[in-house]
Every structure is written in structure tokens, then in C-alpha cells.
Amino acid sequence: ESYAEVLEEEGNYPGALKVWQSLEDDHPTDVRAHIGAAEIYSRMGRTDNAIFEYRKALDLDSKNESVFKNLYSLYRKSGKTKELFNLLEDRYLRDKRNRILLKYLILLAGDMGRGKDEDFYKKELNRISGKQPLNKNQ
Image 1 (cartoon, rainbow, N blue to C red):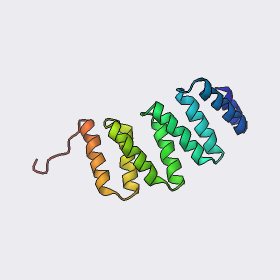
Image 2: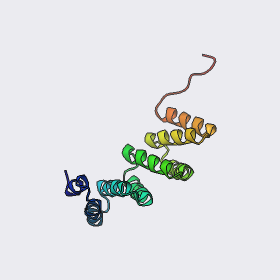
Image 3: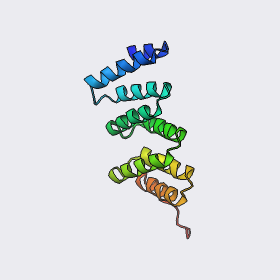
Image 4: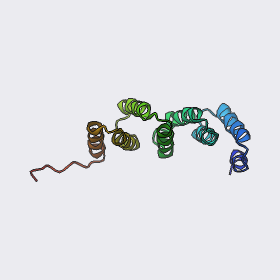
């Protein structure tokens, strides 16, 4: 358990945030530091700051399902699902084999009533997973 986590458990969110930010300054590629800061911002109700930190974490670790889950939750809570969908679609163009990314694109497309997009991403996930849909004539 880190010092930041102890401060967080004590309810000292500003202190915990300072520790995470110091760690970010010293180790800018430390995914855990960005996730820690994002979690504190989220607890403080600072959604935009939390989203910013989770996006930094996602840039460093594009297959971290926890980061996707938290981004999905925060964007939905703030009514910005379209913004997240656009962000993830852009990432998909650069990372077409990322199963976690596809999972969240499918989830968002379903939430938004975008059936064609949902079907497309389901097919893509099946394709990269080696699962081909059954032919109707079989």
C-alpha cells in the first residue's frame, strides 16, 4: 500500500493527489500514477480532471481494461458518450487488434442505438479472435 493510498483511505484527497502528481512528475510514464490521480479526482467530483488522467493512462497502456471501464463510466455519467465513442473510434483506426477497445466500442454503440456500428465492431472482434460467424447455408 502506497503513501497516497493511505492518505486516500484517511480521506485526505488533496494530500493523496499531491503524492500522485509528484510521482507523475518524477515518472511521467508510470501508468499507476495517472490512474491514482484519476481515482482521486473522481472521488473529489472533478470528472474532467479524472478523464484527463485516465486518457493519459490509456495512452501509456492501451490494453488496460480498468482504464477503459473507468473512462466509460465517467463519460456516461457526464453525458459525453458520443465524445468517448469518437475517441475510441479514432484509437481503433490506429489499433485494430485491441480486443478491449473493440469491446467498449460495441458497448457504446449499443448504448447509443448505433446498430450498424455495433454489428461492425462485433464482426471485427470475432475476426481478430478467430471466430467466424456461421454461414446461413451451413
